[in-house]
Length: 636
Image (cartoon, rainbow, N blue to C red; front, side):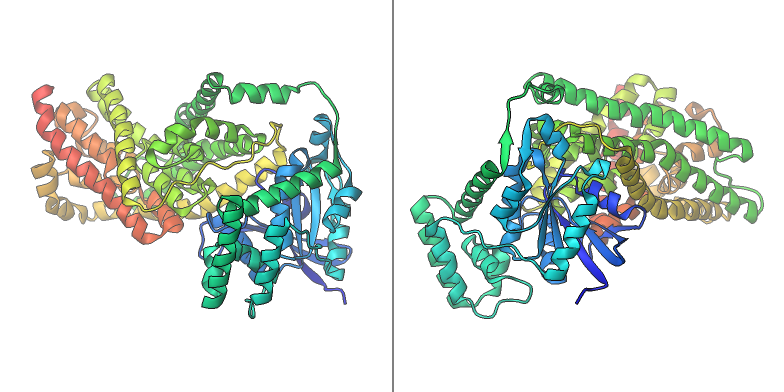
């Protein structure tokens, strides 16, 4: 009997076009959030086809079903626990052999499958032609060729998907070498009742691979047998059983691909020549620096220009500087209006343009090249090359930077990256450095603060690396062909990422700005400032009113400068000495992430990790601030 609604999972390696297929099929009928209890993004959508409702889940791009990354865990848990009616395995036609490695693992799970050979047009440009019928015969499941960016083949893909769902067509068993296969059969016969959703063959293979999660589910006699059989395989091949299984899959992938595709001789394409330049031992670093420099130029220079322009435009309607006197209604409205302007001057100049560029370099293939070239440098603070992108974004704003750590593989790497980002000199901190130090001390001291900040990021990153247990994962990314990405895909990815930040940032800016101004106007901040006097006046050698400035800066770093102007006027040099300006700027730069940054940290990593990061920022700021307060008067 036909089901009126079926669930389909899109599975495959990264950069094979899954997201393009997902967007083409679901259009605007999409929901994007996180997997329950995980920081990994979950995208699902709906469509109607031939009178049937199809629910599509776009699984993260992965290369295996191990438990080394959160993406791999959520993908295999979804297939096992949710039991989708069909899994569409998307492959890149130009690198068929490499993609089949994951296909064989899906087939071991014995789930209803359709193989989608995507980007066949790109493969033809390389002289590669894939015979659908031969591949279908070798794998025992339906195979459909597509060019997703043009919508070609998607109707046929949906028809085959419904056919597989109705007939519950499962892949045939493809056997490995006899020394491995015989032990898989032995384990399958010895297995008791297996957990619901798992296939016996898949469980047996995972036991041979010493998968910790599957092994923990088994009784002691099965664990013992699996360990003995795995040891036998290791003695035969003189390598770990996990590596033996990987070799078996690659051997089969090679044989299947060789029988299903033809390769003709072609000239080296422009894409391949450009690829050689981008990964060259010398020119590759130059191109990576240019890409990174371009991103920095946009977030730091162009973004700041657009932000100032928008602030001036809104200033025609109403001043956006903090208001500390007048009626309560006007103070609250001024704070709320300032919060709206703050949100708009964050999202429009920094978030949207950067996410557009991030989506472009992700989908074009540039990101993998830059990450590959910068991997060795990033490993010095326990991260790999992909972490460079969030760190760069941190120079514009910490909020989207921390949000974009989702491109990293493990929770540990995301947390390390977010920790480093919390110290990065974002645009608001830059305003503080330029508006105080560069203007009232000297440009060279401003540059010195920037250099100090970079040194702090490196040192704190090294300390965090020692404090967080675990190993840094290897940089494993598919080097797919360079291409011009679809603007529709870029626009949708940008909007999806921006939308979640809008819902988070605007309420915090609006409520936080209004509340701080109201508390000050009511005289409630002065007592707090007096309580902070031992810290501000005693330890940091600053005026007592600096406590108010630090409270204001907790909402937005620029409020330190704006609040100072409100309190002492524009002649800041007469109210503070040069060492005091430097200490105030240093502490304001480091002491506390702004409220929106704390909110996104809490959303991504929980309040415990957020508290540790915040305390690390505060401790570093106060230690260095007190140290500089005692040293600077002797050298200035």
